Amino acid sequence: MKWTDVQEIAIELSEKYPDIDPRTVRFTDLHNWVVSLEGFDDDPKRGGEKVLEAIQAAWIGESDFEDED
Image (tube, rainbow, N blue to C red; front, top):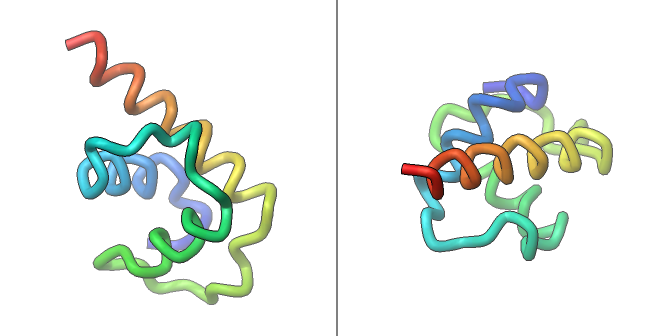
């Protein structure tokens, strides 16, 4: 996975942290969680604020979708 795989990262995070509300996650924690995901293989320095915002938004979308089940 690369930083550009925003949707895939969001799905992985929602599966790994099912009890976490993504709206409450600090970007420093989010960054650390992404780089520690199994299969993540990109330069940690490339995970800036814009990409973290996109990942967080996608994760929120994933968690909202799961709440509808």
